[in-house]
Structures are given as structure tokens and as C-alpha cells.
Image (cartoon, rainbow, N blue to C red; front, side, top):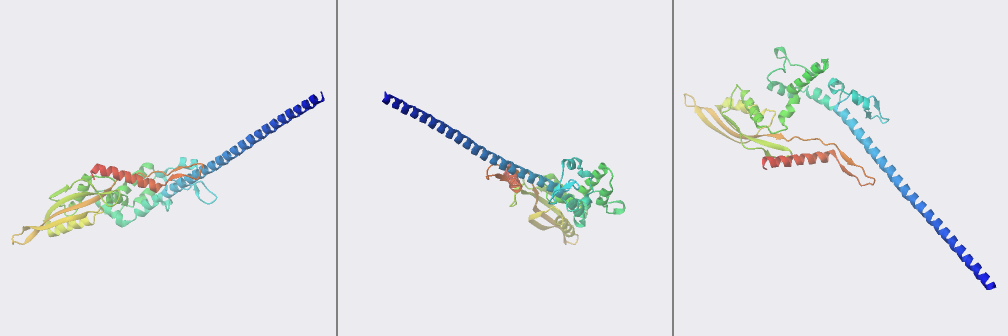
Amino acid sequence: MADEKKGGVAVGKRVRMTKMQQHIILAVLIASVITGASIVFSIYFVKYINFNERVMAEKSEAISNYNQTIKNVGICGSPSSKNADGTVVYTDQDLAKCQPELLNVETLSGTLRYNVMVGMANNVNLESVAREITSGGCYGEGGKRIDFVAEYSNARTTEDRANVLEKMKVCSSLRVVPDALPAKENVEALLASLNQLFLLYKNKEPISLSPAGGAISTSISGVYALPVNLRIEETAETTTGILDNVERSIRTFDVSSATLTWAGQNDEGVETTLELSASAQAYFTTEMTVAEEEVTVRATDKKKTSSVAELNKKVTEEASKTYDKKVGN
């Protein structure tokens, strides 16, 4: 009987110990789960905060770049506020009120618009080229040079400003730049431009003027050459004058080959007429699109970025490949 009581007590102790062990193990498991979950959530929230900081930093940089672009180009006037470091900040209200056509360009010193519309427009050497090849409207009464910058400043309506800007494009160096290197292949315009150089010298015309095939690629990416053939038969003085006009042209003409022969005599048997047969080429560029910078922000330090320069290079290369296929090179 005593042995049975002792055995019952021992079994009860073991049962209680087993239950206590189970409770301890369960408590340890619950604590482990809570600790693990806390660590996981802590890591998640740390990464989440870091990611948001990266996003906000990239957004701030993008906003700063846009503000700087607006300032550099001269799209809007002075902003209503600045950052603590002195950088410009264009608010939504500033952008809503921004009207580039109504701005006085002379107040935008140092911007692209100022450099083009004031700096380049006042370059007499460049501007005179465009004025001389324009049929009319670039000079006032008595051949007086019109100051388009002053007229733009004095214009009071949007229509008047637009008209002055159009005259600037036609009569100033703004026209010289696209004339020097057009942004598209235009054989008719090239032949007309070359024929104009002949007409400028005593209203002479070539015997023949024709394209010599399609566009060919050059060593410069995105720049192509248009070959032409020409033939003239004039006196030595006239031939020299025409060649001088071609040489002074704002658009480059590279002569690849030329043949000069005497083609006529006067009554005394003296050779007076020269026949010039030449092959030359002018240049043009393909249209290019400026792509915005694309940045992929990731939670880790591995970010895939594409800079503006890289994107523009890719666009130019693709445009060149497409055009090369088009012209058959």
C-alpha cells in the first residue's frame, strides 16, 4: 500500500514536470516567434524608411534639375522663393503664371534665350549673312539696319512679339545655324541654295546642276553628305566670282574633284571662256530627340541608371542605323 502511494506521487510529479516543461517550451516558442517577428518587421521598416529616403532624394534632385533647366533656358522669370542654399525654386504658382512670350529677354541675362536672341542677334558678322540672302523685310527705309532686339522690347502685344520673333528667325543668326547644317535631307533646297550662289554674282546661272546620288554617311555620327555635280561656262572673272560665293557660303561645300578647260575664244583667237565641271558635297544631320533622364530607384544599393548623355547617344545611334538602312549604306 505504501509502495502504491509512493508510485502515485512519483507519477504525479512527472506529470506536473512534463506540463511545466511544455509550458516553458511553449513560452519559449511564443517569445521566439515574437522576437523573430519583431526583427523581421524592424528590418522591413528600416528598408522601407531607407527606400522612401532614396525616393525623396531622387525627387528632390529631379525637381532641382527641372528648376535649373527652366532658369538656364530662360523659360520663366525670377522665382518667388529660393532654398536655404540659394538655389532657385519654381513653385506651381510660378509655373502657372509663366508666359515665355511675354518676358523681356534682356532681363534674362545668362540664359540660353538671352545668349541667342541678344548675344547672337548682335553678332554683325553672323547676322549680315542672313540679312543679305533674305529677299526683304530685314532692312528698313533707305537700307537702314533694323534693330529687332529693340523692337522686341518695345512690342506691347503678344502678336507683335511673335512677329518680331519671326523676323529674328529669318533675318538674324538664328537662321544661319540651321542653314549651315540642316536637320533633314532636302536635295531640292540644296540645289536651290547652290543656284542662289550663282545668281548672286551678276545673275548668272549654271549650265547644269544636279544631285550625284543619294546621301552617304560620314565619319561623324549622325552627319551625312549630299553629293552634287555642277557645270558652268563663263569668263575667268565670272567663274572666279562664283567660286568665291560658294566658298563664302554659310553652308559648307567640299569640292571632291574639278576640271577646268578653255571653251571659247574671242575674235582675236584668245581663250576667254572657262568651262568648269566639278563634283562637291554638302552636309546635313538627322533629327535628334533629347530624352529625359530615367532613374530606377531600388531598395538596395544596386540602381540601374541611364544618364541623359547615354540616352541621347543611344537615340543618335539608333537614328543613324535607321537612316543608314534607308540610304542603303
